[in-house]
Each structure stands twice: as C-alpha cells, then as structure tokens.
Length: 126
Length: 108
Image (cartoon, rainbow over all chains, first blue to last red; front, side, top):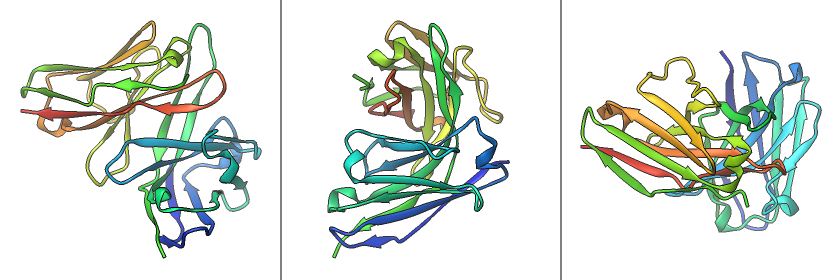
C-alpha cells in the first residue's frame, strides 16, 4: 500500500520561503509512470492544484504560482519537495502531496490522484 | 480555460439518489476524477476514468458519467456516511490541473 507523508514547518514568517517534503513509502518514485503533486486548501475553501514533478525531475507548475515555486525529487530518499517563496498570509493553507496516475488518450485522456498524504497545516504569520 | 464549475450544495434524503455535476472545457478532452472530503480529512478518490472506475473500498453506489463539457457523479442510495464535500478534477491540454469549486452534499 502506497503511503505519502508531508513534513515541514507549521509556522513560517511572511516574506520567507516554505520548504515541504513528501516521503513516499510502499512504492518507488523512480519506478516511473506517475506524477508527484502538491495541492493546497486554504482554510474553509476548496482545493488548489500547485504543481507536479515527474520521477525524472521535470516539473510543471500552476501558472498562478510559477514565479514563486520550485519542486524537486530525491529518488535516493524516495521523496519529493516543494519550495514556495515570498510568502504572505494568503499562503496559509493545508498542503497535501498526492500521487497522480493516468494517461493521454483519444477522445479523452484520464488522470487522477490515487494516493494522498494526510496534509500539513502551514500558517504564515510573524 | 481549465476552470471547473460545480453547484455549491445539494441535499438528498437517506436512501435516495443524488447527482453532482461539474462543467468545464477541459472535460471535452479529459475525464473527470472525483474526490470525497470529510471535515479534517484528506480527499479520497471515489471515481475516475471512462468506465466510472472505483478504487478498492469505494461502494458501488458511486458512479460517474461524462457528456460534452459536463461530468457527473451519482450516488445511488445515499447513506449518512456519504455526507461530505465532493470535488471534481481534470487536466487540460496544457498540463494544468483544475479542481472544481466543490459541492457540499447533505444527507437528510
């Protein structure tokens, strides 16, 4: 059974950079075929997709966050990470990591998040 | 545009059927996946793909369908434990993902 676990600080100061790590167990990131995602949820709000990174290290970011985002993968530790810079109070949210599976096809492709971490609350405050 | 629109809230009597819809241009090119989220918990995948696939452990009262730019999640014979927020999700042709605005399902 694949499991994901987020780790990182619960409190970060404004203008600072948030660093989160997702540790994957029960499966290898380097086996390929999946995308490794970050998703967040502001308090009382809906889900917001942040971006993903492939096992080979190719990232894809939400355009609205791209200028502040860096994602990386460490296959030796079976982890992937997120760095979000220039934080403001508006970045306060629960951050989830999730595995994405799927493929492109015609007339419709399909992608889905089959495993999620439990989420970690990040508060941006001085 | 990769925006996905859902009705904010629906209610259903215990044992009855409820349909939740999700609309967006990206659904013409990608099937929606559906997620159930209960308070204080991470989302859980309930439906994905063309054949209304359900992960192991998801009851068969959950089903999905797609037509044009609309995807639907149907709960047939809703149970009290189905009360939750439901989100659709889809990629778009650029590789972006979008989540729907979410639907709160209340079981009466």
